[in-house]
Length: 345
Image 1 (cartoon, helix red, strand yellow):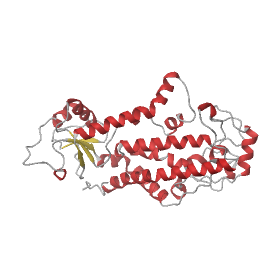
Image 2 (spheres, one colour; image 1 turned 180 degrees about the vertical axis):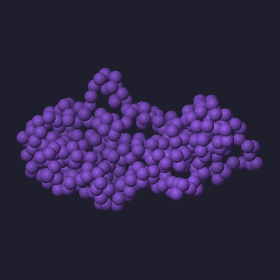
Image 3 (cartoon, rainbow, N blue to C red; image 1 turned 90 degrees about the vertical axis):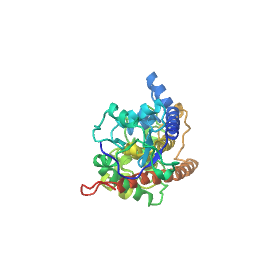
Image 4 (cartoon, helix red, strand yellow; image 1 turned 30 degrees about the horizontal axis):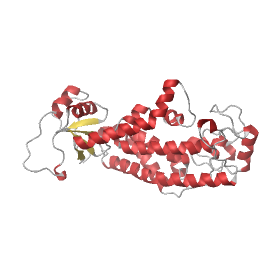
């Protein structure tokens, strides 16, 4: 099992177990409605999107990670916490430090031996600068970057370039309208609030200026030429901007791609933001979502447009610090990425 040579911040068992428990309770509350619907074979066109498009499972959201640069201490852990560490030691991209020469990967028995080995006797009171007391479990950054390095670099570039641009707040959510423009069959089993003809008229009466490729790619064929831009995957870093609802929802995708390198609290912050944005996304869509308990945001009216822009600006403000925190994660990962086969310092 490889060792981690980069400095890491240790968390004592009382701290990391409390954070893990708080995370699990928060995730349980956030996914309760989804789990209830699944058990009753029910659907919700608003919330189900988050779980199916990205995709993410409630169990995945419930698993807490401390994030890159943090180690979980074993010394002084209660038996239940020690068992949890033993499980974590077998997870992909995780390692035990310090690891003995005869420790193999993915062995609960061997992890148990290391984690329960008593630490060297202390010569005095321990401080934060002393590092971890005894063995720990942590993210193996080198192994993670070996597998995910190209994706991390792409994501780092996207996050940074998006954050550097001013927010554009004039799209009015017309991407959802363009996805049903002049089309009789629709993605959701919901009626169109204005009917097909009324929906088409709204698209034709307003400028369509979608910057987000993953929205644009679902436009109907007749709607594509109406967009002022023609986004593509290759141009996504050139066009993504922080006012876009879907760019800000996609911070959840970024957190998921970063996997155990992303702190669990940040993952759930991104999920909550994506959930709230998705509500507006559908309220401002051509679909009638009143049956799901949501009032429409009628972007075909002046009042509806004003409400949309105000809430869009609020989401951009909420997304900004999350994008910064995600960039901090990618920056840390890239700082410890092996270069030319060398072990990161």
